[in-house]
Length: 454
Image 1 (cartoon, rainbow, N blue to C red):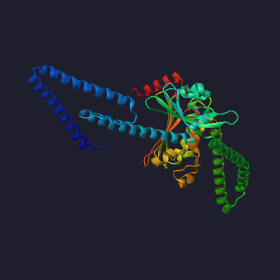
Image 2: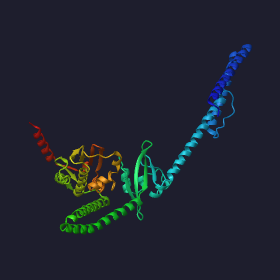
Image 3: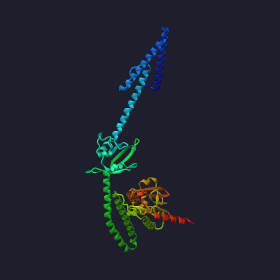
Image 4: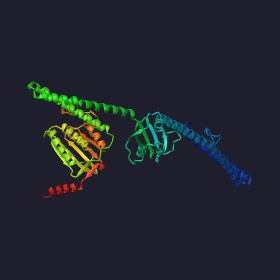
């Protein structure tokens, strides 16, 4: 390839040479015409010949661009030599870049084609643009015969069709595909290239099977532990009644550990029950005023009056769901706040309406939680401080139970914490789970106004 500076000099030289040739031809035509008395005729002939030569080169140029696939420039001289040369270099560069892009695109497709996850590219109107081998195997798609068809016409899975039609937000879902051999897939979607969609299918059948085995094992073992624990606790109570001073301490410690194990078994059974349930919680009305007052009494009993407990419940604001599960979840949050807040600290519990969402909030002035711990707090048996959790009697399952109860109610848990300042656990319930008693709300507002008036 000719360097840029050399190409510039070559272009200027050819332009100057072509200009001199034209000027020389015109001068010679004028001199010859002056000698013969036909200067104008000869000048017209010279310019006409030059125009014909230019048109001829334009014709060659067009045919070369249209027919020549090897990009070899035709023989020429003057300025046309440079034009052919420059266009040839541009075409060769374009061909190299095109081949490199095609090669890169093919390598990318080969890489995606080798993935065990299914990948499907859809147009804005949900027509099949491309899919890899795994997606074709999972959904029974054929390449290239199915390209260009609507995905809903090719895949007869109502859950998938409904999920694709759920505009504008689509949370990832799990699909069950197959009749004889059912497989479970985790499906997610992202937008790309303006309004196109990319759907990924990850086979989670084996993981779900192992999770089911684990849940069954934990539930069975926990259930079997209940009977021996009941027997042990009963004998400890009998021994405690007849114990002397030397036996009092060991028996008290054994009873405490047996109670701790009972709580652990109860939490394991409760978690297994919530994990196994894939259905949404019922829409049964929950009397939140009665529930909150009951939790207030339980919190005072757990705290032993060592904390400043502040309860604020909005009147007339009800909840639709499973009362037992909600009570378990809320009480877990309150007991955690009491457990991890030193004596003399403040714990504030609120139930209120915020922008069509029902909010149950527990705020404490405890030691707080470092940011890197927060994403893992709802994992089973995850503890920020193992020693403190054991000392306070925690099982490490409370927040896992909270997460599953909220999931069944379409709610979400938000955690905000600052080390040294305290933590806030906020349960947000959607509007569909909220019931409002307008009469109670008006009565409460009137009471608040009357208290504020002098």
